[in-house]
Length: 140
Image: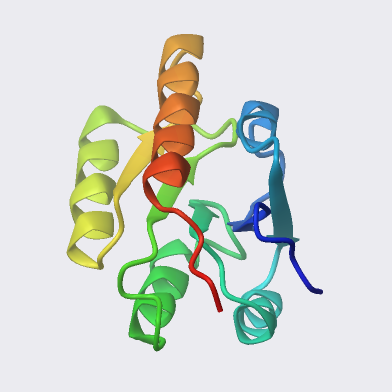
């Protein structure tokens, strides 16, 4: 798919029931949604993305596997990757902190728990908009 110069390509590797506020925060973006690792791999081969979002429940909890794969691809070392807990499963504060450390160790920007409160979801959505504003499209 050919994108216009002002279209922002975003890859969303989602689990079931991801928070709809995330999609709403990506208005003006060309969102490619994938639910399996193979779909993600094919999407990454087809076009470059300026932002990648990965849900904790992405295909049997393969979030970190996809993050590691993506950061090894040519051209993706500087692409921001944000990992999310966007479903209704409960995650303890200790697990959230450990996930945040793991995501950062693999080269991601951070791990955000979007079930915690509307305020956290709003802050995360604003953070995503800031990433997109600071990461302008490259001219290919």
